[in-house]
Length: 117
Image (cartoon, rainbow, N blue to C red; front, side):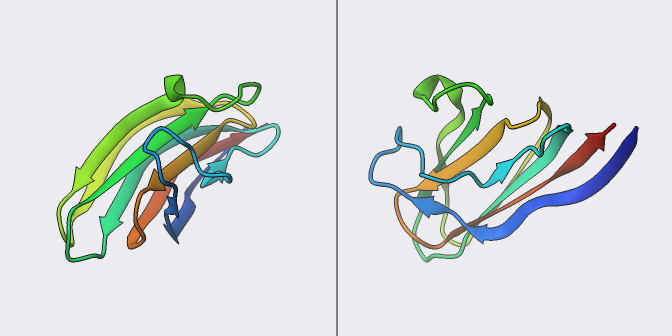
């Protein structure tokens, strides 16, 4: 088995949607086929001069994204703030991370470990 520490996604602008419970249309990161991922850190940066809100989902591969998949709901970032979320979240092949905000100016970077056979 091979373990690869890597930046899984980003830095990339976070998708915007009108509702905090509506996921964006595309995933920030999707676990590749035949791979298990351990997400170690999600870094969210607010580059605007006002507070902004971000919501993060973890969608299992066979599921339709829903509010039950939210792991951070309406997380508020102050003006020009960067927040580091440290975790050890195991994700299976084709699971996905979705991140959304109501306004532009937020970026996300996801780091972790991919394990392949």
